[in-house]
Length: 193
Image: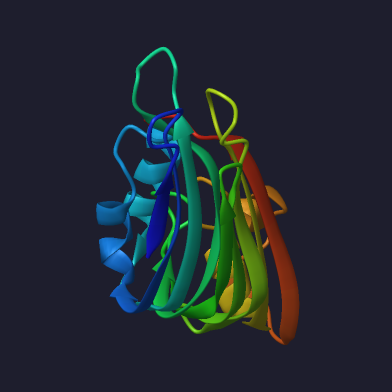
């Protein structure tokens, strides 16, 4: 639903959208290609499967004097998701069966990961924050807290390009016990990331 304003003067629009269920794979279909393309491409390439539940969005558009059209002035919303896959980097396996919630605005998109699975290692919690929509290049911050058998954890963090166990001279198959590990990564979103 929405309302146009300014007939006879500067045109504007304010409205809301509510979607009960939407496949995660369809999120990019609702994200205009020209609007923060690097962030949109990361979402399209690294989030898959699962369902968005209870998406609620508010949007405001205002008259853009140079183009004569409407431009985005305000956007915010939230949704829950379940069964989603999240791949942090191309070379790494996806965390699967991820559930959590996300918030978004004209400045950022923030995913709170409540649980998931990474090749038998449990995702306890995490976050994926795509930031700085107001700048030419967006930044992403990722954090994942994992728990499980040491062998499984070390095998995951030893994958290329990370190679953490090898750098420490540890053979993942020669270690026993359980542990919790927090992985953090941050980078600028470029078309080739």
